[in-house]
Length: 336
Ligand code: NAD
Ligand code: DAU
Image (cartoon, rainbow, N blue to C red):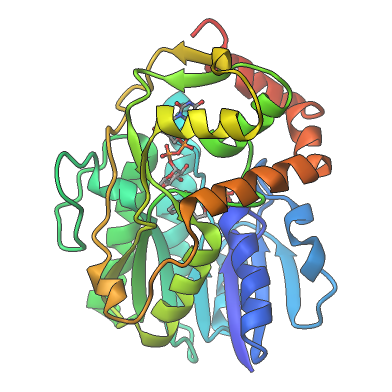
């Protein structure tokens, strides 16, 4: 059996990856380590909680004892755990830096001592390149993060590389573009706008709505990680982009049209400070390992919208029953 540790596996991408991996790799035994922050939810793993090849451990990656004991028995670490919402990092960056920079350091220290570790996959992001004026970011481009979340990711990205260069830890770094799909926390733009629109509520569009993101279906991301784990080279960075550049206004219109809602629901609000105008990834390097995104954006967005329509049990308790979410929403959007 291959012993796999997935950090942050109760979050959006992590839970999709755990489900995918258990089905795609019968010889993998997975331990999910997750602190269950506001964004980590056991419901995301409901299909695999009783799977004998899966174990859930509630714990913090910054806890060296926990990290050491779990990393020591692993052949593969896939490190997703992080604070992930840019707007929250603008409200306060401390948790971002603690979790992602210090937490990654704790995991890497544990990895140095792990006898059977074959790969340590550091899940970074396209945001580390900063805003992209023309063309597409390549793995060798300078990192120019422009918000505290992105800067914490860049710090951990380079820290992970340093553990490869200095100690030979078999680190591979991936930098993915904006993911979408089921189980994404309804603070991010697609699930927020879809669930607001379902309820006939306004959708708060930042600035002029012309910022561009490159959308990647989470299932394509999971398949990319398989390719990187099997064929990637330690010490290397791989961009994972969906090839779907869409301006936020266009995205918003598509969501409203799919839900038969009027564009009158669009509420232009003050822009995000430091709002990166555009992300765009060159994925030639990962293409060379045989990966291509398979999910057409229009189809993937339609399926995602249907998922939120059919799974109100999942998001209504967050949006309507969780005072912490309501407090965040008021702080972020009221009077904006
Ligand atoms: P998410 O916010 O949905 O999930 C993060 C998970 O990490 C949660 O389950 C949370 O409980 C857990 N976590 C947080 N702090 C922890 C700690 N100290 N110890 C253990 N667990 C902890 O995030 P996501 O969107 O699934 O993103 C996962 C990873 O992928 C992140 O590293 C993120 O930066 C990266 N990424 C995300 C995107 C995207 O579009 N969502 C794109 C590129 C890269
Ligand atoms: O690009 C990868 C990054 O994608 C990841 O590193 C981050 O963890 C992830 O959260 C995501 O960051 P973004 O800031 O791009 O995602 P978000 O969904 O917050 O915003 C997408 C775009 O939508 C962005 O241009 C801001 C805009 N937006 C967002 C929200 C929440 C709005 O116009 N209104 C909103 O209410």
